[in-house]
Image (cartoon, rainbow, N blue to C red; front, top):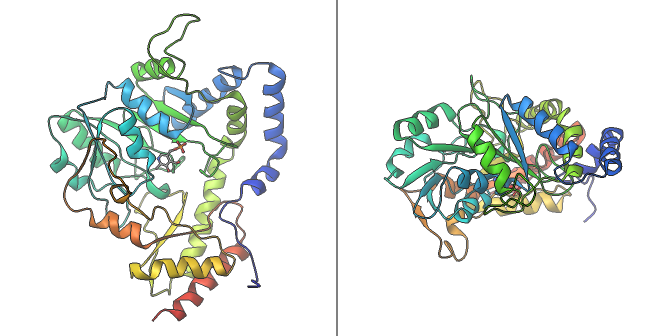
Length: 378
Ligand SMILES: Cc1ncc(COP(=O)(O)O)c(C=O)c1O
């Protein structure tokens, strides 16, 4: 079918072209330094990332999944322990709990924000519970003050899974402020993405910092001296790309927020879909702009209609973790209470294209196509 416009889901190449000189200069610096692993560029980026978050430490690791399980291991979480999260997140949140050897405990999400519902956490706590992992889903912070209060009451650790919301903030709190450690993913499609995989942990806990630094490098901080560990490092080339991009992340997120506002204004009259909810006082950085079809049975039809019209719509995440085939693969897992909101989110979510370089004309085209689809719905 001939379509009027093609709207891609990602703008990686547009972004590269916009700041090519800065990225290329950093890549050249790394190449000419002769130090590519745990070299000066990684050190520089770690300092910049810690300063950006206002935390005392930042540790570059191989990816955002490793950041979660490395933090868990550094906290001594392992077999026999339980970690609470919610099932409508990317698979890696639970996967990291399993890699650490712990049991993943799922509670439902909030029906509006889709982040973990703090009101359901306490019912899931047992003597084995060691930590809570809230996910800042789609770019909006979970209710960290409520989660911190529960963690303090029960002496639990908190790891923020911040793969999706770098530079977001809550009402009166920053990311990294109310947790023991915060994981970040730099895979290319994230708001701050490198050309491949990468991740980091930020923390104010010197013990976690020291442990993760060791664990990521074969249990070593000194040549030829090792303890049990892994190889999970952020390469200097990626650190160089990320250092160049970090300077722009706040502006880029502002642009995402503008594109989101344009979608929301354009779709205000829509009757068949729910629009994203932004908590008052929160800075939602719209990693994803996710609408939900009011009737889950209509979801696939909307995605198909958009794709047929040149709009690369996707779903995040259309199968909740506990509904994946083979769950839980012999790993420890428990679901506490109904998880209807998470299941509904999985069944009805549609992500519209969202990136800072998206043009207003592209947003308007997507809006027009969603409204055109609405007129076909019976
Ligand atoms: C919520 C969430 N957690 C964890 C991850 C894992 O990050 P990575 O792909 O860098 O391992 C991702 C993204 O991929 C994610 O979206």
